[in-house]
Length: 193
Image (cartoon, rainbow, N blue to C red; front, top):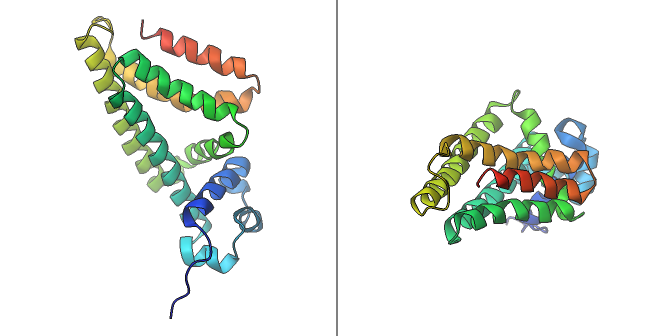
């Protein structure tokens, strides 16, 4: 008879995001990972496989969750500018929270693996395309409703908004001043005017 898992697998993924976010993929040793997850080595292997398998699971879990939130904000808000603003201010709120931001830094670890890992690279390509399409469709709606100027190249603007959202994590790592994040987002959002 198989034993039931004695831990919450989703919670372990959140802990993995924190550990990988703090130390990076290469800097995360197996002992650091086991200590940070609070599970036994064999449970790690039985449930997630290798360190790489756990890393990829944690990255996909994090990005899928965040991307779904972005798309929800873009699709469910009446005002296009308001929806896009919500996307950016939600990221800022997370990055200003000392506990929540720990998970966000897994993004840097994942991006640094793109040149070396085709699975991660392909996952990012699909996610970037999905988000750029969501921004594009939102901006197109904004043009049709007169909220976004017709002279705007919305394809380029969609890409800019998506990459700017990614870059907020870098800004947060490089500056502990929350005002810097606010200023950055203010400039990004000014491109909608």
